[in-house]
Image (cartoon, rainbow, N blue to C red; front, side):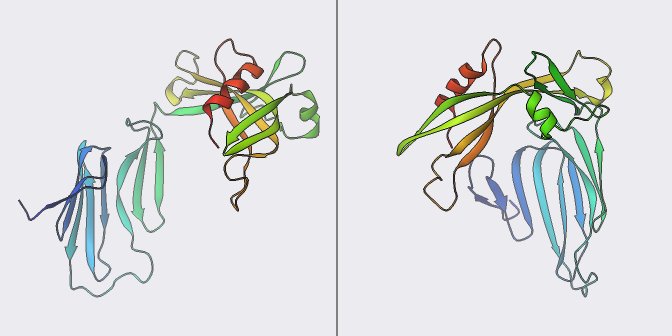
Length: 230
C-alpha cells in the first residue's frame, strides 16, 4: 500500500516509509507543522491522537529563503507525561509562542530546612539567595561517609541539605488541594565518585535524591548508596 516499507528502529521508532512519506504508529500529541519550499521540497507534519505523519513534496521552485526556512503550525507538549500541558505555535522564522495550559503545574516555592528546626521559603514574592554566606550559615547540614563500588571501592564524604519544592496547577494556585510537593536531599561530595573518575569525563561532585516519609537524612543517604549508579 502506497509503497510503504517497514523500518524497525525499536519499540517507539518502528515506522513505515516511502519516497515521500514517513508514518510512525502509536498515540501522539496533536500537532500540525508546515515548512514552505526552499527550492527542494516542502514538508507537512501532523498527528491527530494516533499516528505521526511526515509528508515531503518535491517542487521545482527556485530557493525563496536565503537562511532558515520558516515553520508554521502548532504542537502540544508536555514533560514527563503523555497528556499535554503547553501549546507551542510556529509563526515563521524564530517566531515561536508558548501558551501554558490551565492545568500545567507552576513552581510555588523552594524551601530549605534550617538549623533551628524551621523552614525558609524562597518564592516569587519572597526571594532568598540560599547560596549567600548569610544563608549558608543558617541551613542545616549533615556530613556522612559515602561508599560507592564501581570496579573498585570508592569512599568520600557527603554533605547533605534537606530541600522541599512545591508546584500547583495554574488554575488552582489559590488552593493546596492539587499541589505536588517533593522533598529531597541535596548532596555534595568532598571528592568526585563514579565510573568516570578514572577517565577524562571525571566523576560526580553532587546530586539529589528523593527522601521517603519518615526517613532521616542519613537513612535516605544509605538508601541512595544502594539505588544510585554514577
